[in-house]
Image 1 (tube, helix red, strand yellow):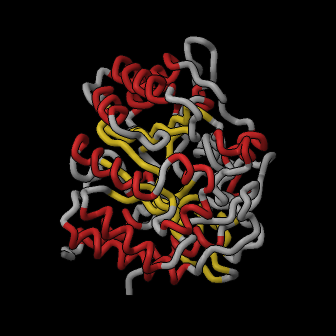
Image 2: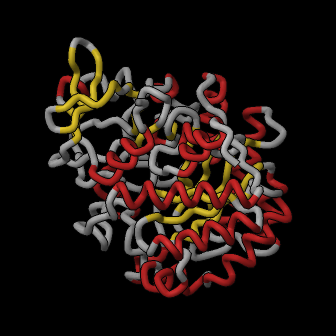
Length: 381
């Protein structure tokens, strides 16, 4: 009987994981470490301890490392190999991900490249151009978000990043051969300067890499009307919308600041416009999975898929520093049951499923790409 690695991933994201000192000894030197470019996903802070950003299961499934020192799941080194245990029972081998060479380099201006861009999973180059969200100043941040507290706790990345330095990092990272696409995002802005900033960044990345259009996604504050065209014209291949919650009433309650600036209805209007401009499958909608009933979540999957959008549903964990810290996520079984239904909806909708701009290899905190990969590989329709 084959091992269900998607179920194991769901368990690890919901329950968290810990690792022995021996297993962690090369993290931050030989293997890729967390650098908290935007959020903190662990169940507890670990300011003085280097932890893996993510790791691999035997079939290539990428799992985000979420520290929980009380978790029943533990990674240990035995006979020179990393093994995942549930209490005393051995489950499977795991692998840390190699540390990119550019993490040890500096830009021409003297900044550490690791403080500008980081690799998510195995192949996604991540840049956060704004480590702040305007909703925090009015205490109207999304209840699950710990962006500001994470930045304050770790201070591990540059808050403001020089545009040319971002281009330099992109070139070096791409030349290293690890990067297949980028993700460019930041907290919610209080002005329209974001569009100009992001388009300048994309154009600079194009200049340094020599790429005509950049494979990957910009995930700004909800792009509207002419700004969608500006993002497309900058040369990025995909755009994303952090819609967070599908159920309208829950969206208003969980995202008080964001819902005042972009309603549920307006999200849909703008996503449809973006699909017409970027094309089917090149508009991503980010949802936080686990904060609303399965039925409403699946209704959102159906509606979004039918209009040609792709969905990235992150598995929620109660992050320290967020207003929901200390709460519990649904069970792994709930996530598994719901995500398989979601994958069936996506496949039946006929929506474009492509790994050009986002894929399972950069999705350590989501399950949908993993299920779709397996379903399509096995010929489900």
